[in-house]
Each structure stands twice: as C-alpha cells, then as structure tokens.
Image (cartoon, rainbow, N blue to C red; front, side, top):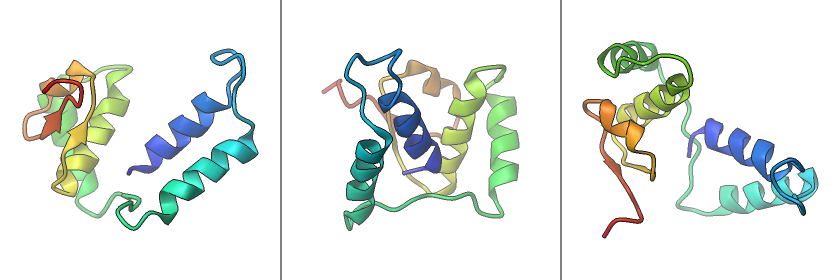
Amino acid sequence: MPWQVVWAFLRLSTNSRIFTNCLSMEQAVGIVQQWMNLKQVRVLAPTERHWGLLKQVLKEGQVRGPLTTDAELAALTIEYGGVLYTTDRDFARFPGLRWVNPLVP
C-alpha cells in the first residue's frame, strides 16, 4: 500500500464536506493502524529506481495535471512488480502497468 493511499484515506474519511458522519481523525488513524497490523500489508516507498520509472510513466502516459497522482501510483506499482486494483480506467494509459478492475469478473 503506498503512502498516498493512507494520506487520501485520512483526508477523505475525516472530511465533513464529503460525509455527514465523517470519521474523527482518531477513528481514521485507528483504521489505518489495523491495516498496518495485517501481515499481508506493507507500505511501499520509492526506491532509487523511482525517479527514472516516474519520468518514463509521465512521458509514455502523456500525463498532465490531475493524472500526475495516477502516474505516481503507476510508477510505484511497476517499481515493486505489483498489480494495481482500481476502477479508474485512466490507468490503462500507462504501458507496463498491470492493473485490474476488481468489479469486473
């Protein structure tokens, strides 16, 4: 799990503009801690290869503006040889990225 996922969860789940009954930060941090305690979860951080991969993904994906965050997640997934699970079809623009829509059988 990339740090971006943690930050996004904390930012969104505690935002009262999005949820009428949003989580308190304490509740949200508790949920993240539960994730971190799972043996199958590890936090992915960029390695020394990251910048080179990110530059390639940005160029090949013809990235601009908001898609920069998607490119970062794509580069990190490629870096670790992983598979990105998302319903966002924008990730199809990144050559070399293995991704799966979990809602499609």
